[in-house]
Structures are given as C-alpha cells and as structure tokens.
Length: 65
Image (tube, rainbow, N blue to C red; front, side, top):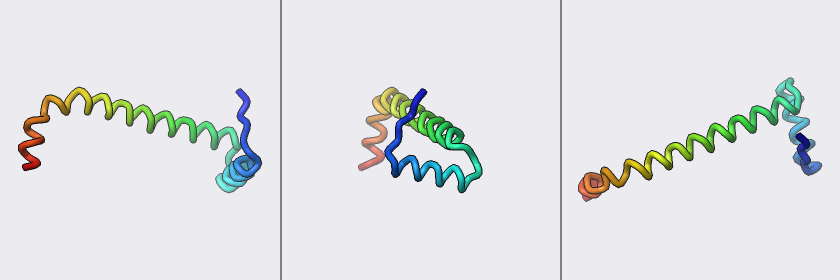
C-alpha cells in the first residue's frame, strides 16, 4: 500500500511519531484502527436505533409530553 500525504501532513506525522517514539507506520496503523472502530460503533448504534426506536415511539412521545 502506498500512502501519499501533503508535505505539511507528512511533517506533522513525522513529528508525532518521533514525539511518541514510534514509527510513522505504527501511528498510521493505530489511527486507521481507531477510525474503523468508531465508524463500526456508529453504524451499529444507527442500526439498533433504526430497529428499536419505532417500537418505543409511542412511549417516547408520551414521556416527552
């Protein structure tokens, strides 16, 4: 895989990796994993809400009154 970054992004990545004492690849890998985890959680939550909210719509409406 090839990753192309702008010069400012590349410099920021190099600085961050050096600051953390890790390789740039390690920093990128962690960032990708965290992104995938957040996106997966968000999709799961949206799916559950889409499935469950209609079941409780009337009760939620009454609670809001």
